[in-house]
Image (cartoon, rainbow, N blue to C red; front, side):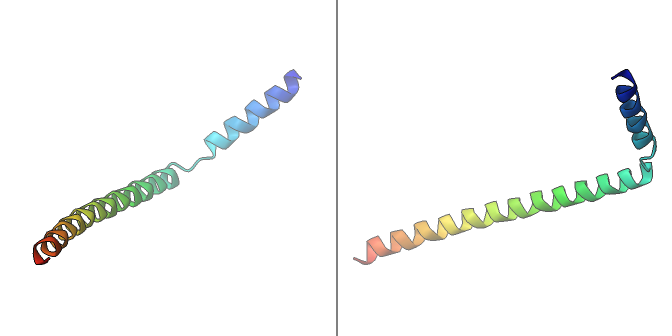
Length: 67
């Protein structure tokens, strides 16, 4: 049992040591960029939804006044 745990710890240590810091940094930057783009798109959608709601209100008012 102890040998099994020890071998798992050794494998984990080797896996961590095998991480390429540059690759991790690059992937982190890519993720940050993707998150920023998603945020920008969500803000755009929010602005467009506001405009649609304003137009909807205007159309409803026009329909009320035309009858």
